Image (cartoon, rainbow, N blue to C red; front, side, top):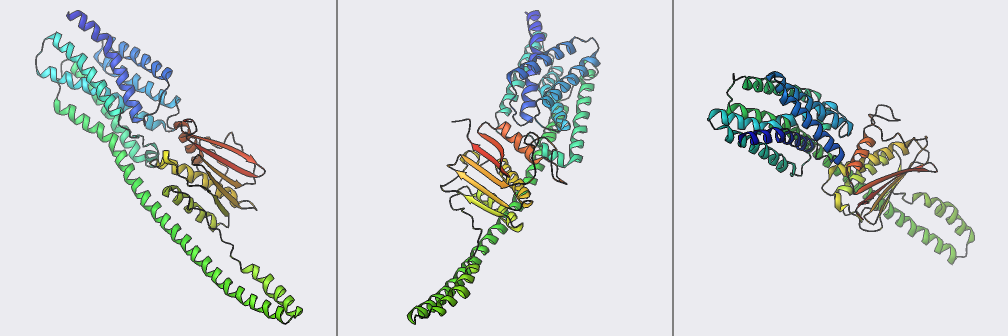
Length: 437
């Protein structure tokens, strides 16, 4: 019985470790969907690595080779899948995934060293610990939260490097303790296991909390910008209303002059009124760029468009919105990155239209299904390159905007983006819930 359990445990242990590590890695990388082929290939490779690692006679090699090669496999997997652009972020979460995958079994082994148990029970507990580790990883993976904080860590390289070196230190320290445990020079400590877990959780949540704090600060600033844009727009409405009142007053005087000329049948007065007053009064007609916003029921979308309208107005760009029916992006109302995509597309439209003689931007919103942004453009644009990382035709720009849009579209099945150029007009057409119909 013991030999069967020992053999069964030797075969299943590496499999559990591989699956748990992949689940943690997928969760930490923002619930990225790996293809079945990639997932199975990585699992088989990790299984072989763990089997080979467990076969080393040297405790030091057994403790370090498997974890090191597993981290390398996860790093390569994340890099090839183009999940994120930063290899350092992928490495950080690969190391953390390896630490989390081993924690439950390490805790179980620590407990069994403190209490003498028969080998059969210990082998059974080893198997049970692997099952618990997988269930714990699956439970956390069910939490619908994007753990990925790549953009925050990229903006804060000092914090990224601190967390990365901290995770590397924990990985080396954990391998060293595993070696001491294997040669019976370290009996294990429950306090160490929980301290290690606290440090691992800290590595995960420190950037998450910091990122949420920064996002909250950005939202407050964005709200201030939206309030300013709304106030400016309201002031424009008041100014145009005043202009209409003045024009109405002048129009009444014009009618009185015409009436007097008609009654006296004085053609010269009528001609004078037409050429000197009516013709010139056309210049007094307000030429307001008033947006058709009443049908945009999504307040965040309406605010985003209003802010970009104000930016366009400052650059003397004609900005029109055509929304004939109530419009709301119901499938994306809780997704701030969706509104960021709209903002990026409108920013690019403003920057391109500013360089043209026509200076026009038109936003079409159709049946809650399509958002079409059309802007005048002058230069030839290579549509095959504009979404590439760090590609830009503008000075002092990172080229990350449209790359972010491309990654967002790639990760969401209910939205598509079509880009085209027609007669010096750059057209970007977003189709919402495109693949769910």
